[in-house]
Amino acid sequence: MEQANSIDSFIKILGKYENGAEQYYRGQLEKYTTISPSIARDSGYAENESKIYHEAVSLGATELEGLTSPLEKLSKLQHYGIPTRLVDVTIDPLIALYFAVENENDPSPGNVYLYQVKGYPPDSNEVRVLSLLPTIDSLSIDNIAREFGKEFGGSVTNDDILSIVDSPVIMQRSDVLQKSNPRLHQQKGTFLLCGNKVNGEIITNSLKSLDTYTPTLVIRIPFEYKRAVKEELDTKYGINLTSVYPELPSVAQYIKEKYKKGNTSLDGTYSIVKEEDTSIGVAKRISVIIVLNQQLTIEQIKNISISVMQHYQKNQNVVWLYVARTGDDYITYNWLLRAQWVDPKLKPEFRPMTLKCEEQGYYWDYNESYSTRADIYSQIVFSEDCKLYAEHKRIWDQFLQVYSHLINAFSVGSWSKFIEEVHKEQKYIGKLYLQLSNFGHSHDKEFDDFLGTISIIVGIVNDFHFLIENGNDKGTQYMISKKFVEVSDRIEQVNQGFSKWATKAG
Image (tube, rainbow, N blue to C red):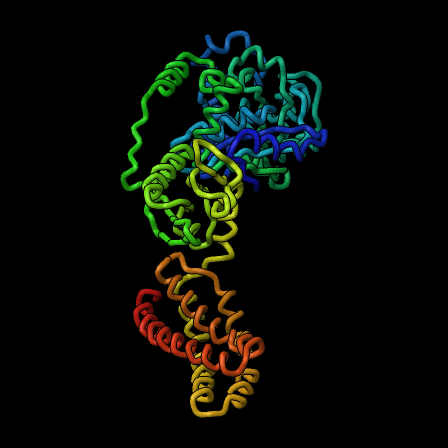
């Protein structure tokens, strides 16, 4: 999976897959984990596919006038919302992109799926057989062969029927269907025709859909960028509600949405979770981290970012702002957006390197992979609190034994004896420190900070051998004595922390 924050990045990603193969696209919200036909979304539909087809054809006779083949009728019924075994796909990636971002207010990201597969012409046996199935009562092989002859002339063998029915197929785009279906024409669309699961020579009512194919590529458009991408599709490419749904109700909805005034409040939309003074010399600098409390579009996030930076600009020369989409992203430093303001009057020697994109007097860095990185982090970075507690407590108890031995050697023994003990224990302490780095993070920031303190303490003691190797005896003894005082204070805090978190971590 790849991430696109804009149409340009979307097109750039697709450019890597231009290899001459047939390409078909499907756009939908990521929360829909399967790509199933409408007829399969209710068991009653699937069991009565033939009845639904014939009743719809009868009731919509006027709309279907002049359509002769099962495929033409199914195509029309599909776009009137009648449950069918067809799944919409398109040959135009920007149309698929529109469907992925169409519902801009749904917090789910939008996904565009690319399939590089062989398409079949409308008059192929594959398309004819699969479009015939919804029109007949019995799915026995003999009945399919008989009805095929009646509908299309010619014949098809039993083996061919079983082979065709067992696999869905994508139909090549057809001018015939475009004439009878304006929406299909506008969407540069075609269909996948679902197959049926086959047990031996028994054709079941269970359908095989687009999920049978593994997509060549999936491109995710995060929620924050859906509105911006949708607006760009409209203004630059003329792809909008009225172009993909050429019916009057769609026109009305488009007009209302286009001219409606938004009313976005900043109250409660984010939390400032960290402020850090990073001043250098005479340059006053501050670093600020905010976590969003709800999903917002990228334009809303930028407006919030500017508002936050303006608050600090009065007393600072440089403001750094880091925006995390969730608390987990904050823990893993997976920033959705970084922003920066630099006082234009600040002398060049005190100016930091700026971010690459300048807009409205601010500098920006848009993370092109935060959404997909979050997926990876959720799988490999975070662990359950009870497991983290047990793992850290085990390492902590082992560390305290070594630490007690070292502080005793430092207090009552000679300096040379202490150095000898540090070298003896260094490998073991290094092993403990390495294990801590492999345990992962907690979703609870407070608990995660507590666990981080353990790593800091073990890390301080792990560095004793570096101090010894790189310093003089007198200065090193003083530094290590200070480190022992710091570690001893922190040990008391950690012991209290383990008591506090024992119950909370389960």
